[in-house]
Image (cartoon, rainbow, N blue to C red):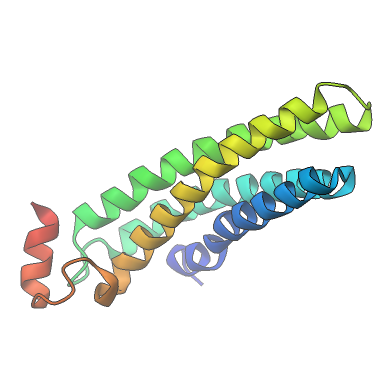
Amino acid sequence: MNEAHLHMIVNHFPIIGTIFGFGILIIGLILKNKTLINTSYVLFIVAAIFAAISMETGEGAEELVEDMPNIGKQIIHEHEELAEKLAILLYVTSGLSLVGLYLNFKNNTKAKLLSFLILIIATAGLFLVQKVGTSGGEIRHTEIRPNANMMPNESIKQSEK
């Protein structure tokens, strides 16, 4: 198993964790259920851990595929830039989630306010996970690229501009 394979295994967890964490946080806030809110926090923390692993394995994956036909360095660079932004956002969400867990455990009055702040940040996370997932898929799945109707060599030239 190489780093590209490892990257393919772990890169879905930050996306799925963010989506599920967001959904569970909304339900927890609507139902005023601390257990659900805390569950969403744990999901955000796990998503951030897997984001760190994805970033690490992504470097090795890049080395293995960047010179393959129909890939192009530009499309990998775009994916990497988006992934770095998502990782930072997930690290922030994770840190705030740790604080949220502590505040919920202590029954602090600021816990609810923090929940809404995390919800706002997670909303931005939803936007980014879609962009990162799509750009990552486009690396090897040329059929989902915006210029999918072009011949393979034209597609590479277009993405390198």
